[in-house]
Length: 551
Ligand code: NOJ
Ligand code: MG
Image (cartoon, rainbow, N blue to C red; front, top):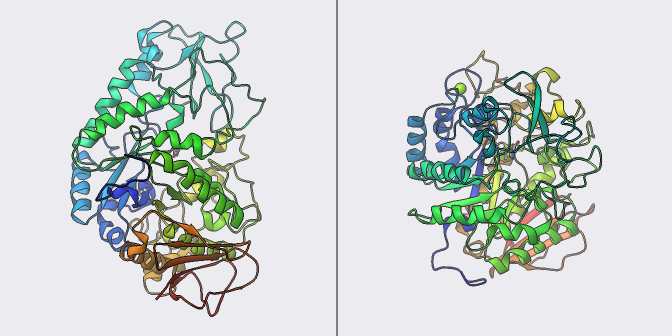
């Protein structure tokens, strides 16, 4: 597609609002305390009523759950605790009937250590052809030390030594995430062919899109040279340049191959990548016209509540993506990040990754919620697509006081119990009622992660009844976003409104103003307020956003 030009009818994903479902925590249907496919099916009316365009479901495949389902032992089936392929077929049909698209999660950088391929690689021993699909190497210093200095995203080295079939300590294998997630070697044709088939398996079932997990990890520099990491270094992929295990150029061949597969299907099938790389220019390479369609925007997610930085990220993203013709996406929260109500209530409001936050940093949750509501209007007014993480529409905070014995995230142990990890953003959704489990599962059943008793005012039912609620704010914003013709295009023009105020115009009549300063600012008199994140008079209070429509 030529630069900047749009087809007559832009494909749905150019401006879609995609709702992320972390399935185990969304809605339980069978009373086992864990969300499941039929639970999600029962909530399709809720999602359609909310006004989102699509649902992305995090991995639902058979998994030993060493990393919340991102450790997959069979890519072509559903974990029996979560449902069946038959239920998924029904889900896809029912979602489509309700006007919702469905995006599945593809984890192709690694498998579970219990995947039959890895089991065969272990039992085959050194030199076995089954080891070639992964990275098995001899250690340094006579085998005692890891083959190189690469590190895991969850902390610690990226290599684990195996015990060989004869019982002796032997080779090492690579895992950029947990040891239970061995990395596949994408230079091996058998790996590529296998995932061609996995893609077709899900596209044949009718899914509308595929989210590509850990996309920049999938190619490694041949020879696996040291990265030069300092001892004890943390995974900081947004800062790395010329790193041998992240964002290596050869990764793009894989996406070209996948794009050809997706394009052979009818309808606008979407690929969206998870790619935390160094700046928008590197990111734009994932969405060149013959690669993936869109990619999550982590620079936006990581940005603190600061007008100058947010404006720089928005403009930098638009500038970097324009030459490749891809639409931006905007993301504030996910199953991997501290919920932004909490983050925006902290003195340091930028995001860390994978739960590596400052432990116990104080958070003013009233302030955080106020900012999160303003951020919702900012985000939904930007051109391109948006991702909403389940519970974001309710203004849920991070649960920071989960008892240690319930924590499941590998970050917790691998950081030497200094970083609590991501369980606190994965606490099950409160739907109704005055006490846990708040309609998430059957009364009397303990959800797999405990919900705070204080969430009774945050339930969907409570917020339905309150016209000022965060849920109702989202619903109205999503409706206006669909209805207002000015928001259909991909333009954005900044307006001058003071240093700590973000102000921009979309189309002819629409303006969005966000006050990130500590004092109220005058509202321009010449526009009608279509929606505001808090009460406004003739002035826009701090941490408040407004949508204005000119006459
Ligand atoms: C990104 C996923 O979002 C995260 O949850 C997971 O731990 C890693 N990739 C590894 O698959
Ligand atoms: Mg269940």
